[in-house]
Length: 192
Image 1 (cartoon, rainbow, N blue to C red):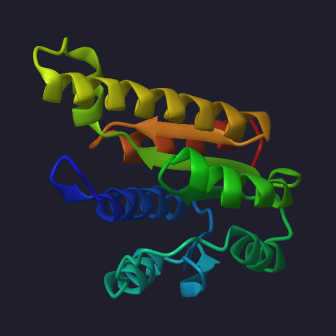
Image 2: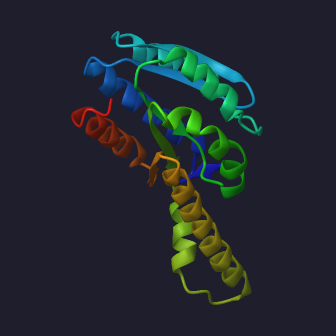
Image 3: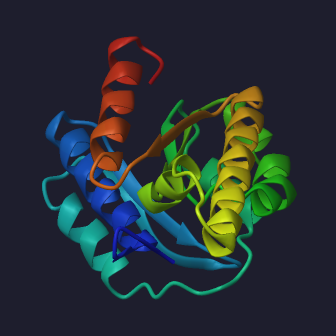
């Protein structure tokens, strides 16, 4: 899908590159694990200067695929790689059914020992549809669907937070900065 005329995955890629740049610039290790129903790319965590290039190169050849994500398998892989308390940023869409069926059951694997941030980009067009007063049957349908989608998103965020994850749900162009703020806060408060 697209948000603000940009593929949703590219918003996540921008945020990944920004967080990698900041973390390695501060001497922290950053890595990458890309998955859907299988692991697609992996970059071991490192604080070296060339880490951004390694992360960018690993993401370059990734093609989004319409497949359910195997969170349990990916999280098990993460747990074998990171024994020390780590901040893990999981980029996903906040679709209630998919999150409830696949992400929520696997999330406790990580939240016990790690700082988990679920990152998603909001669609400002859906928010606009929900705010506008409908003036015909098509806009009435769009208005109702947008309001339902936003309510579903709020329920999904609440469910993730109940399991101990933080959620960064940001507008396009704001996602990177909000995740970096979360990282800096976790670092300054000693949570990572």
